[in-house]
Image (tube, rainbow, N blue to C red; front, side):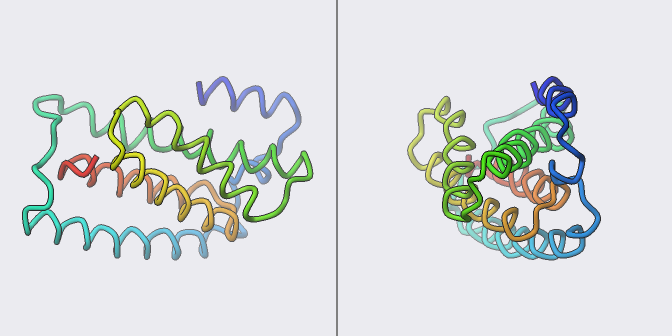
Length: 160
């Protein structure tokens, strides 16, 4: 789906810059997202060490993590941040609250398949944080990296 949307966005005239593939915000985006990832990773690992999570439910499917890190997370960030923010910008919806809340809602909705309210709360919370960071430093690379790291770690410890 992300590949199809990428082609459509480019055919419709969206630039790489509009879609968050930018150099001008790369450093700040990486600093913000790596900082966030380090702080939350430390919290997740500490909670796991104290028995807050039971461990991953993914056993024996070793190809899951490369798929998640290199395809799923980057695709989600492209669809739910890059495209959504670019489309809202073009539509004149430039307010941070509008962009962040709408992108978070659209990002959270597909996670309802897990049928777990706590997973939805975690997804919505991190979606809000990534949305604020993306609004401040519109850059796909930083948020995709953070999503891959935090998502893989959360799945590994059984948080989601």
